[in-house]
Image 1 (cartoon, rainbow, N blue to C red):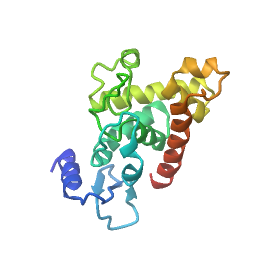
Image 2: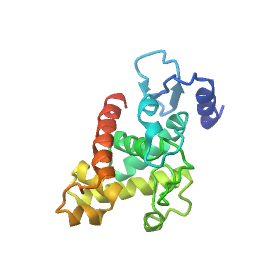
Image 3: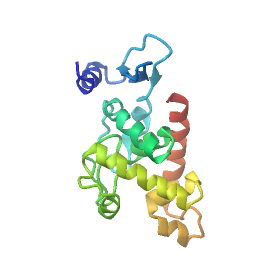
Image 4: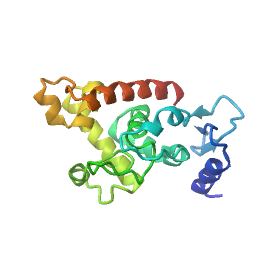
Length: 196
């Protein structure tokens, strides 16, 4: 059975409040389930219930997509040298794993890329999950580099723009949305770090 078909089956078969668990075996085959049979499985979807529904794009959260997009997130995070838990946290806060999310300001897709940012990172279709994750992760890596691996400043720049963080003396800008966004993503990051 193709892996993506299996993931969709697990997501559809799972009750609305069930968690999705994953692990990769010794051969590198990824396994997903809503009923883990051993401690090798790690929970990857429970945070979406409490945090993803109140995402920045005000898009309906899509819980089954946590498992569906996990391989793309892991690959992009590895390529960029970013903790996979941080990418999951940003996607939860930005779009609730809804690849069709479109904010009132024009940010698009899972990682809510603005059209200019999408062009900068060669994302031709910001609603394509794989392209969006790759572009957003590369942007996040550049922000971490720009702000000396200070995760809070990189997240502030992801939310408000790097120029805003620089303009306010390399501090989190005093914008209400950014002041709420940074601690939310840091909390999610901490929680995902324990779960992934």
